[in-house]
Amino acid sequence: MSRGQLYTTTTLVIATLVVAATIMAVAFTPSHIPVAGVESVLLRGQLYTLTVNTLAYASRGGDFKTFLSQQLAKASKAYIPVKQVDVKEVSIKQGLSKCTVEYRTPYGTEKFTVYLQVKILDKRTRLDSTTGLYVVELNVEASCDQYYPKKIHFYSSTGKTSYKWTGQYYKVAVYLQEKKKFTLYAVDWRNIRVYIEVNP
Image 1 (tube, rainbow, N blue to C red):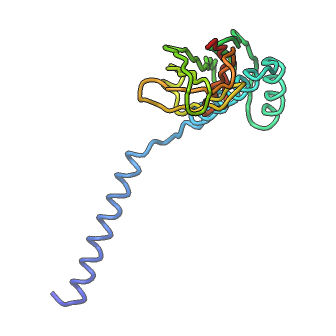
Image 2: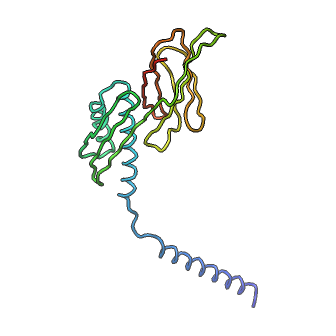
Image 3: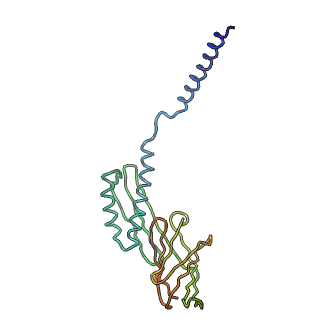
């Protein structure tokens, strides 16, 4: 066999293998991509974010339903097709910011419960002889709808605040010039806020 014949034979074999591989790939490729399924997943993410933002607004004293309606009016014109909204629950109280909202969309019903909850496990107050300040030391437990809070920031209404994560709960210290009642605030990575009244 000449060099030219060998080259031609090799080329034909390679071409045949490529065609066979292409046919197999086409055979195993879905003929229809469920676009509606992708859109449904994207819509769910958008509605969850909208619910979180509304709760964050309400946790600072804003009106939940009014803000949600305003945001939906803007979003629906652009890309979020919502047919009906049912606010099942809104609870903004000491230690808890929570809401449950149900949306009816072209793809079905989506229901979200979003919350941040904070609870004091232990508390003690001592006088720092070096600074002359009262130090209120708190062990604080936090929970949310996302399995566990990714990050929480603490601050108080009256004094300097420090905190650290122990792996199970937060150790919070509030420094006061006077031993009097104060408000401790916790804000998670989504900007949802919770308050607790603390009596030293």
